[in-house]
Amino acid sequence: MDFILEYYFDLSVIKDNFGSILDGFWVTLKLSIISGALALAWGLVLAVLRQVPGRPAAPVRWLTIAYIDVFRGVPLLLVLLLVSGGLSTLSSPIGGEVIPREIGIPTWFGETSFFWYGVIGLTATYGAYMAEVYRAGIEAVPGGQMEASRSLGMSHGRAMRYVIVPQAVRKVIPPLLNDFIALMKDTSLVSVLGAVEVVQAGRDIQSDEFNGSGLVFGAILFLIVTIPLARLVDWLIARQQGRTQRGGKPVPKGTTGTAGGGITT
Amino acid sequence: MSGAAVVDGMENGGPTLRLEDVHKSFGDLHVLRGVELEVAKGEVICVLGPSGSGKSTLLRCINLLEPPERGRIFLEGREITCSEGRERQTDTDFVRRRVGIVFQQFNLFPHMSARDNVALAQEKVLGRDRSEARKKAEGLLARVGLSDKLNEYPDRLSGGQQQRVAVARALAMDPHVMLFDEVTSALDPELVKEVLDVMRELADEGMTMIVVTHEIGFARDVASRVVFMDEGVVVEQGAPEQVLGNPREERTKRFLGLVLEH
Image (cartoon, rainbow over all chains, first blue to last red; front, side):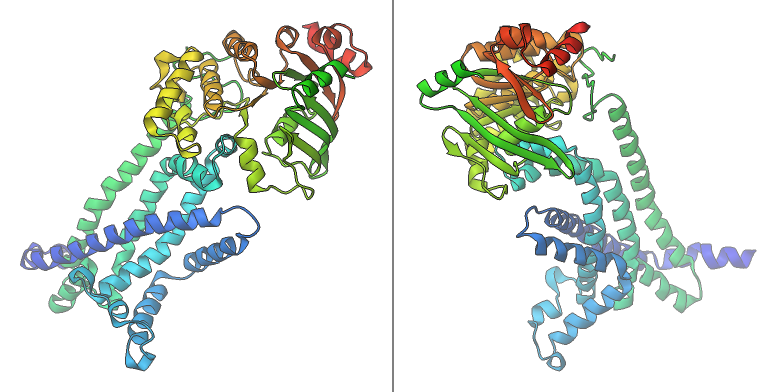
């Protein structure tokens, strides 16, 4: 029993390595926030491209769907390996230097190239996941909204921008946050490329000291962020449902506003 | 059939709207089966008919929300349909800037205040600057009796108020023709009048209107012509007293019998 406690919860190990674990978690946070923000934007672009109307735009829709299918269907680890291997090789003499070195081995803003390979892989994959979430949100906006916008002379693009997407985004904030939680956990895969984020920091301690307490501390740091986020998601969903029950969403037939006396027949 | 109205239209330099043999299907469902209709400037046409007769589809064809697949539609003398029945952007813009529509389900933008609902398309489509668009929105909302609701969001408005915002939103684009698609059908009975009053005022001001409605009283009082549709064609049309009081066609009589019973 003591042995178990000591292996997982040795406070002296945590204390001795406090700084390096926090440094690792800081990398985890940076990876999560930068990739999360980029994936949010990239996912929206993909979702909108997927819905571009008209026959001439059909290839755009197909390409977008193909992209989403591929990145949703392939393990993130594999994507990360292909991104890092591809970019570093193709910018080197072995790969014919087809990619400029600043892009092939990026060290922007003082971060390592592993970090940026991670950002690229996470964004590419989670952009595809989030595109599907946005799509669900766009499809949940009643068709009458697009018709009303079009009847007022707005183009499809303007209607999307000012009417459809703002409503869709509000509907999908909870599932997007869920994807963000998943993304944050998946940043640990970037350790495979050589980035020292919190899981890698814990592993280093584990192999040095034959003790898992550093990893447990890393897990606690994850939970400090992810549990409040999960509660936030629950709260947002509950709030949305409450609003729907009060008649806040367009309801077909017999609609009366709440302030109109709440008359129902 | 409606000789007088057509002649009136010609005197004003041709009809505002002319439909020739308009057809529209949804899959196997042949909804419009050759609609012929002329509307002169300033006319108020009330379209009656049983559900499924194609009334709403007719309105949606006129502003090209549903491009008709056969037949021709002329708006102010210009043909807005093309032979293949496909949507052409220049025509769509031409139509949408001249024809306003109000829907049964209001379709207000729920994430915007009443004022912004009315101002949005003015800014983004007509290129009016923000203060001008808002001023115009305030004027129009005052006109439909909602000066005290400028900052309210749609979910805080009653159905009747929402529908009046929708009328103001359509009017903000300075349309030449207004289409009303069963605009009171989704309203509780006590809220119907406030919307009909707004439409009546609009008619008095000379707006060209096509009103799909089940409000026989409104048709009798306000319409310059009543059109009865059934099974995708215009069965009968004429002055309200004639069509409603003394219908010629059997189908019209049967429909009015059913509607006026209750």
